[in-house]
View 1 (tube, each protein chain N blue to C red):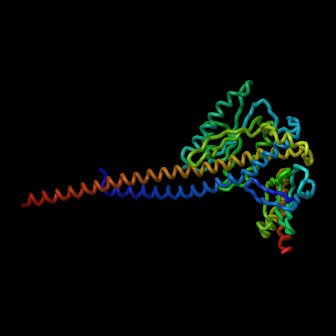
View 2: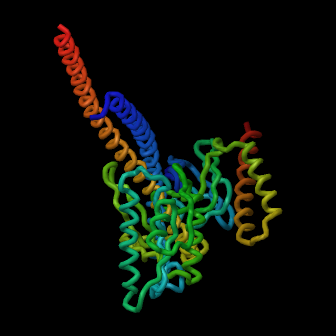
View 3: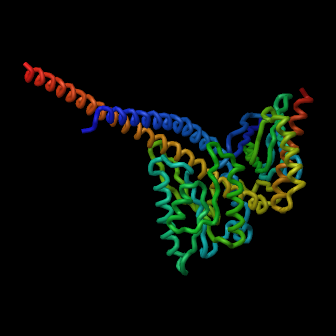
Length: 296
Length: 136
């Protein structure tokens, strides 16, 4: 049986843990709010850019010769951008994300569009993903530190430039991006999208109806070739924002659970403490009583 | 009929209102847009976006991106957009000096292009800030 002092010590340390996890929960909650706001704030730009891209695409004659970012080559080498967090204590978020990436890598490596295998390299953003992929033996072509709480669009341009150049130079035939998408505070889903080649935009009915009247400066093709890199960058930016919101909400929930568990443990330990204290008092009383009896 | 104008950057919606006229810094020079302008898509350079409404004028710093004139509204999608009153003149001057110094040392052509772009933005920022101050 542990002594009273031991139990008191344990209650004290569990209480400290509860205090820390509670504080971390609060911090994550306020950051989550900010991260959600920035997803919403980024949405108008992304929507408008997509609408413009559709319109330009319907005017330009969309072929690979027009823009190399649309080129569908047989895939021999692919790169996947893996966005994870730098810090842990976010529940199963990073574990789920890396598991889905590793499964994808295994499947993709053997699929190869019917003609042989695909070589896959990773470009990581965030330490957790880099460490997990390194352990699994996936080659890592580049690593970027995470972009902080309030990433600006300028922060993702180096990543966008790197993958665009590597795609154009033929180093990779396909670029994908993996991140944890923010479904709700309670749910985050690992997601993998293809960034390059850019999927051909569907022609909307409105686009077909109005594109004759549109002027393009200097030409639809020239505007398109400026638009496509933006489209790639905004894809990365959106993934980074989603991953941020996922990180904060996963951490908030994980910390709330640990605070609850710690409080439960404190209750249990307090019960044990009181019982032990009671038992000690009873034992001492009996000792005194029997001592007195023996003397009398 | 007024003109419905929207200015968005990847980080946020910067401006949305009905205006009389807007002048955007197109890649090949200034482009004035009045109501009933022909539908148009153009890419943007670095410069000042001027918004005229009922005798007053507002200006925004714009760098890169696109403008689309639709039949119902004008949308400016800028890589960077700042209201002129958000610009800190002292910081702008410092950023310009920093970019100038960096340009002296850079050798790599890719870096030079990048530094030039940031120098251009800094210069434009400074110019807009100075104009705002002198105008009062």
